Image 1 (cartoon, one colour):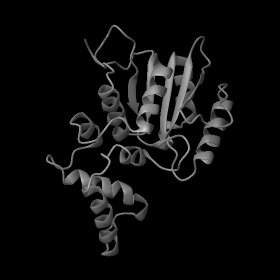
Image 2 (image 1 turned 30 degrees about the horizontal axis):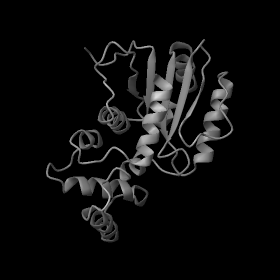
Image 3 (image 1 turned 60 degrees about the vertical axis):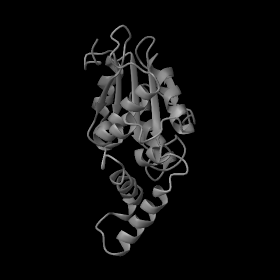
Image 4 (image 1 turned 45 degrees about the horizontal axis):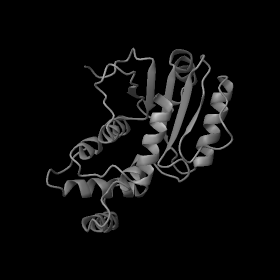
Length: 215
């Protein structure tokens, strides 16, 4: 039994380590066995940022190499703009994408025989945002500390905190994590220890997309 290796014919490319370990541990919470070498599992590769993830030569090689290729990237401020960026790039690579992303995550044919390409735009394929908006939905409903973390982050900004206002949600989530029994856990570990939930509608759709892409 071993974790998937870089030589796996399945590859899931993500922006960075937060995405990498969020995905690995979310799938583990849903019963996916990353150590089961009797099934083909994707190697999860952090690209080191959106710019490196969307390098044309890198994606061209990936499309020609892997039987299953998944991409998870942030929609950021404009999901339509991000999707058009992807469509233009994939059209040049001979792997056209549909006009709009599926709310359940896009899965389409690759350029290799019997291959698949899957794309998930964080947080939910339609709303602006990043992995933090996805994580926010995993904070247990009714948690009384979460509104305080949001308000405290707003107050900190008013007092001159150097946090970029664009990162308000990220700051609030990390403040909330700092007040747990084991303070300051990263996203992936917070999933493993069940500080975060795992069954929001967005999470369930993501797990369904992953299974459609890689099984």
